[in-house]
Amino acid sequence: MTPQTLPALREALPPGSTIGIVGGGQLGRMLAQTAHQHGYRVAVLTGGSRNTPAGSVADTEIAAPFDDDAAISRLLEVADVITWEFENVDLRVARAAQRAGVGVFPSAEIIATTQDRSLEKKALQEIGVSVAPWCIVNRQDELAAAVREFGLPVIAKAARFGYDGKGQTRIETHNAVADAWQRLGCQRLVVESVVAFEREISVVVARSMDGQVADHGCMENAHVKHVLDSTITPARISEARSREARGIAAHIANQWGLVGVLCVEMFDTPTGLVVNEVAPRPHNSGHCTIEAAAASQFEQQLRAVVGMPLGDGRCQPAAMLQLLGDLFLEGALDWSEIYAAAAVHLHLYGKQEARSGRKMGHLTLVGDDSVGADPAVLLAKLMSLRQALTDR
Image 1 (tube, one colour):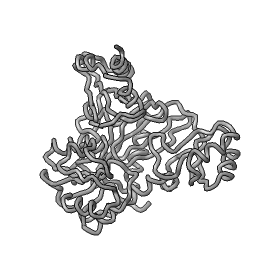
Image 2 (spheres, rainbow, N blue to C red):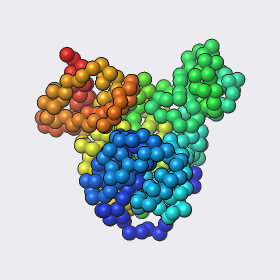
Image 3 (cartoon, rainbow, N blue to C red):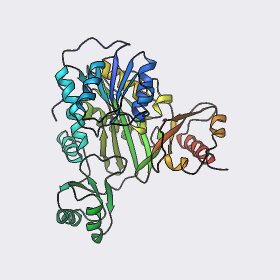
Image 4 (tube, rainbow, N blue to C red):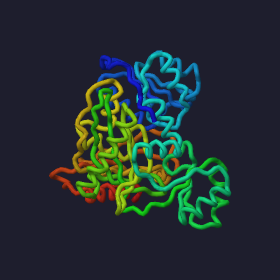
């Protein structure tokens, strides 16, 4: 990948400028809230929906598809810079912004690379980053051949536009190949050898226009049905492994010429770290940074894209627990215990409809003298509170 070519370092965009956000989800919502805190205005291109989590707190919500030329023009009329809360979008807005002389951070090339799993893996390997053995397949017989080559089990993923476990499946037997091919839409796939790992970790790294790099340390993540369920920080790894993980994230950010925020998901294996996926935006595993760090992942994104110096991303011990739509489908929730737990931070995303697996909110607990500093204990407290939501 060719690093983003930046214009001569310009004056930072001052408060009062408008941040254009592509995507209307909860990540855009939290970025918009941070932008407002720092005196910036926000315009959101939602992708089509109205009253989105981000759009409902923005100064301007443009409820139109990402490839709507009139909507893109409207966004560029008000925005002084463009950034992303979601990478699986049409890149027409980036091309139009370039023609209009409006900065886009991270670059369109980084977004395009991370939209396609094969391009992403090639780009990582080109800069010496370890990934799981993989190959691309275009037909069912090629999928069967990949399974024979790698050995069972394997993970098959749609090459483009996958996230949160969508568009992927684990193949456990040779007889399951045909069904997997059909369920994944008979399309181009990336097939990966399954990695034996001890834990999943992530590092959210930010890089500024002048090359300053900062991260939030290592997060340890647990998933349920391929959706992130909980995060604790610091991850339960050695200091040497933590330095290795943070170094990998910084290396990717520097080599790709990142301006903005990047989350690097990794497998911690007995023989070293293996990068699983990369997201060129804030990430759910970084939500605890809102309370645990002086400068959250959203503040770092804001600082980077407006040309300000990065802040201090170091985190206190903390735990984060997702609130998924399944909870809300079980009937009215009892929030009393959460509100009674003074140290617990509740974030609800303002989504109008609950669905199974849909991220509706999260809880965060930061370690202090009253609750202790063991992240596992903090997480256990949050799990008890989440359970109380449905205990009637």
